[in-house]
Length: 115
Length: 113
Image 1 (cartoon, rainbow over the protein chains, first blue to last red):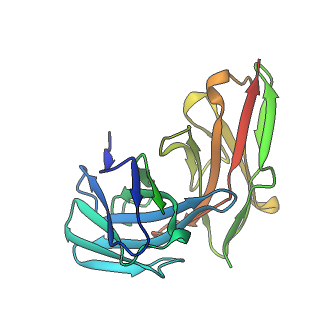
Image 2: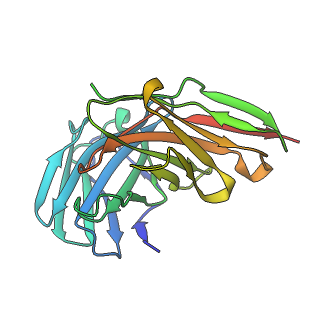
């Protein structure tokens, strides 16, 4: 089974801090994703990466950046955390698009609170 | 624009009763459709997916979904609900050869005994 591990289940940070959320997958997947989940809005894509050092903006990239230095690890960075970034963050991975019938696999999420 | 609508924010059913969760999508190309379930405090688990072939697909935990192109729908069903099915359910749509998924807002299922 695919294992997607997010380093923290709960995180509390202060306004203005630089925050790192880490995600590791063990299936050598090329594609990795960061989503934000808010009640009534479902999941919204922040960024995704289709290879090492490659990234693409999703639907809500403002206030976030990402880093992918190794294939198995995809980091989400809040450059200067704000209270409106309090949310649940979900990481996902999937094989390359040529394996078209393979779904995204999700981690357990990080619930981030910005005070 | 691509979108997914789950009309029901909350649904409550009795244990043992049948269940249908609605999903309507708007997508310009051939859709690739999913249902995911999220138990409290957990990530998303894939229930089933559809990308071609038989329009009635079977998934895990006794769930099934039917793709109806004419109605742009992909409703999730289960004949007899168990208390452990209480969770939030998400419908999602993507392109067959694409990376991005568009998610619905989710439906929270409550099961009463």
